[in-house]
Length: 369
Ligand code: AVI
View 1 (cartoon, rainbow, N blue to C red):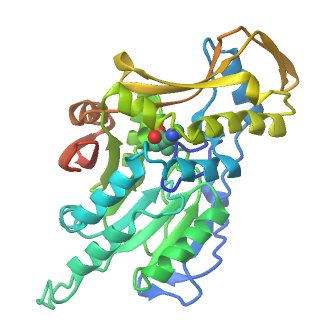
View 2 (cartoon, rainbow, N blue to C red):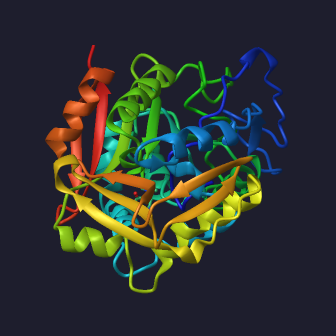
View 3 (cartoon, rainbow, N blue to C red):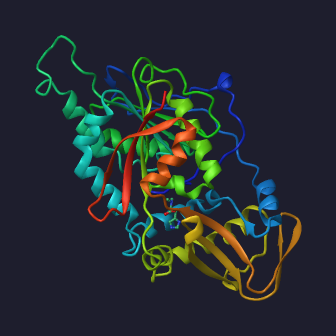
């Protein structure tokens, strides 16, 4: 369930770290990666109780399902395609910003291990790893007395196969960077596992893609608090946040002319039919993306074309004509609004970088106490 970067994670049950099966497929150490590729530890995240969540979501008024349901294999493929649509510039803007500002960001991050939450295909971290490595290079620090540590990278994701693929690809591009994958539901993790790559150096969180916007504000705040707990004392967090823009631009970005956003939303109904024995007719729903200024968010929904009855999860569900099933919301935060959200979670802004049009902001957060 991953985008080219990150999406709100499935949030199944608690993990038992005690029973962690360090399913190390390959090995790497702080001295450098092995030729076999990066190690992936599988913490066996518990599968979500999809049926319960669907029954809860369809019983709500208005009906709304968790956004991560959108990301089955086909949904992940469609999301990659959304990122290539001319109207949806978030991914391109963030990638360019990371490339341009990597040296400044690396300097502000300092030494430590980069921990990417929901790494997905881990396509954005490359420039940061390069910049951190350059910063630690002997030419930059000629004094041999305390040579800075080379950066290390730890990717967290719910999908073991995507994680292994992403880590392998990244390792080929950055052969000198020690890497580790951890297959887990980071929202439920009590602590990062003990591992040489994670021990004894600062944990620098990385959460690009503005995926925080897909969480309701209270859940977003809880996630920021969870990042703080996982990163531990002295941890920092680099996070990408999409900015509010005109209604026209945002509604176009979430309802592209090619119809990919609409197909992405309708695919949810295919998934529900497949996984929970449903009989939705996706064509009987119209896709709608609308800017809700009061909440500073885009709301994406499938709107019933007429009155209809649908079987799903062993129950019958009615939709009135024009009734919406909300598939996802995407909040946009000004820098001030984001910092106000992050403060109760124990974070304060240390630096931020933006593209020339101020469409997106990369915030560097440090712990408030
Ligand atoms: C993953 N996330 C940041 C996307 C967004 O922009 O809210 C999800 C998305 N859904 C439709 N288009 C993009």
